[in-house]
Length: 397
Image 1 (cartoon, rainbow, N blue to C red):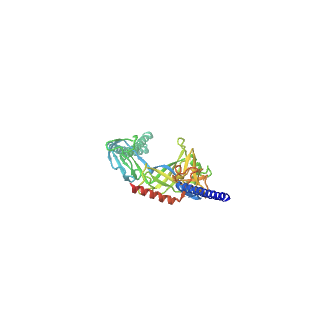
Image 2 (cartoon, helix red, strand yellow):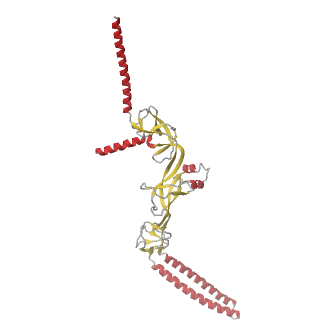
Image 3 (cartoon, helix red, strand yellow):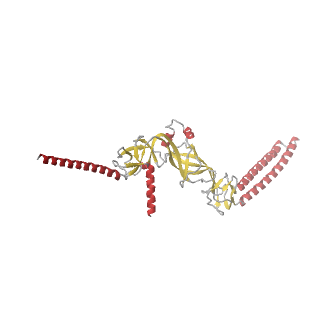
């Protein structure tokens, strides 16, 4: 009986041991299955670094001088001597205006000058003769003074005739419209046969000096206060300290010449709440044209900050979150604050994260959620896997 009981006890002990082993094996298998099921997510360990980001401002480009060409006299345009987009030099003829009436005015004024000169000569002889007679007491002082007055009047009429001749010659010269400065011709809306006048609304054309160009941006009142540290420094001092800026053209290309902030207007527009900033760019090959648009990239340097990719964050109800990965590879969402200055790809973290922490930088909001488990991998490894997948999909097509 005792042997039977002992045999049964041994069987039960062996069975219990097997059950425990089976249970342990099942837990390990479950853990392995969970790890294998967790998505592979690229992570990075945070560290302090220096940030060279840039703030983007929309810009309008204008020539250093944009001169509207308007006629000084009225008349029909007889010839257009230049074409749109042509480079002209100062003093070069641009338009001819019908000069017939102005040439006639010059001829009349010149004839009037000749008449006045003859009158002066006659009055001079008369005055000299009267003076001799007066000196001999042959005529009265009154008669002599009349002759002197006639001479003075003749001289005044000559001066007036000469002034009229100068005016007529000046008006005649205005019939040839010349370039007031060197530059590039803009649009020419008025052609031969059009009546031109000084009061016309639309100019004959515009001459733009594009050797240097100005890019205009707007800074808000808050931006200006930050720039001057709330008035601690003068605006001129800060302008001199500002680094060179970059111009991004409308097609996304970067203009090769750097720009320098030259002036900030002293008046804030009440309608827009901003001040105009002028930035000078060299334009040696004439690539930039007046009226073009682009974006100004103004560099901002920050030392000893944490920089993370924008794709590593999500925003919910005006709060931004990053996803910290602990030693067990469990993800925890953490609220963070970031600087408003960014380059469109990265954020500078001002609070919520610290050096040494590990965060997920991909799959945020889809594969990566608060409390999820991941398999951390190196970003380079993740990029290589993505390339392999893309190549495989391309081969499959």
